Length: 400
Image 1 (tube, rainbow, N blue to C red):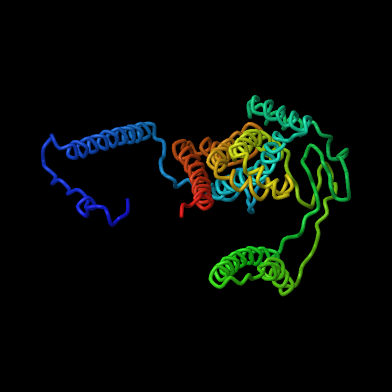
Image 2: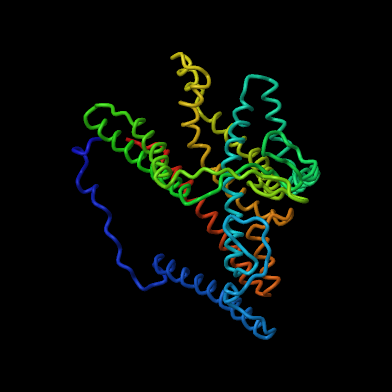
C-alpha cells in the first residue's frame, strides 16, 4: 500500500498516557521495583564493604594502594620494559601486564592463522589432509589446557643444555634456556622508523578512502599502490636514513653456563605460547569450518561457472561472507585465550597473575592485589570485545 492511500490519522503516534501516582499504573510499579532492586543490591555491597573494612581494621591489616610506590625487591626474568628489583611495585605490575599482553596478542594472531588453516583443511577433498585436521581438532580440544602447558614445558626443559645446544644455523641456538638468535641493537632511529611505518599505514588508508570516494563521484579510477609504497616503505626508510641509518647486529655467544647477547625466547614463554595457540586453534578451526559451510552452496557453483579457481572462490567470495558468521564466536575464542594466559603461573611465566600473587604475599594486601588482577583482565576483555564488535558492525550487510 502506498503512502498516498494511507489515512493520515493512522500515521499519528498514539497519545501518551499521563503518569498517575497509583499502584495500578504499570509504569509506577516498574519504577518502584527498580528502586527496590537497586537499593537491595547497594545495601548488600555496602554491608560487604563495611564488614571487610572492619575485619581488616581488627586484624591491623593495611588497606589502600599506597604500597604501589614502595620498592618491590622482586626479580623478574622476562620484561618488555627495563626493570630492576629496586623499582616499585607499580612498575613490577606494569611489567606483568605487558607480559600478559605480549603473549595474548601474539597468541591471538598465531591462533587465528593456525585455526583458519586447519578449519579450511577439514573441508579439503583430500582424504588424508581432512582426516589429519579432524584428528588434530578432536585430540586438542579434548585435552585440558593446563595439561598441555605442562607437556610443552616438560619438552622445553628436556632440551640439551647450552653447551650441547642445537645449532641449526649461524647465531641460532636452541637449548633448555630457550631460543637464542641474533637481534638488532635498538636505537632511537628504529623507533622513529616504526612510528613512520604506522603513520604510513594510516595515511595510506585515508588516501585509499579518498580515492574510492572520488571514483564513486566521477567514475575515474585512481591508483593507490604508488602512494602505498611511498608511504609504507619509503617514509620509514627516509626517516631511518635521516637519523643516521644505524644497523648493528648483536650476535649471541656462549659465556660460561649460558648465552649472552642477541634476543632470547624463554622456555616459559615458548611453552605458554605454543600451548595457548595449539589449544585455541582447535576451537577456531571449528568456527571457521562452520562459517564456510554456512555460505550457500550456490555461491561456489556460480563462481566456478565463471571459471574461478577453488582458492580464488574461497578467498574472494566465500570467506568474506563467512566472516559475518565467524566473528561473533571468534570473539569468544579470543577472550578465552587472553583469560587462559593466567595459567602461566603453573609453568613459571611471570605474567600479571604471578607478579600480583607475589606482591600480595609480600605486602599482605590481598584485596588490592585481586582487584588489580580483575581490573587488568576486565580491561583486556572489554578492549577485545569492543574492537571485534566494531569490526563485526563494519562488515555487516547493510540493507539499501
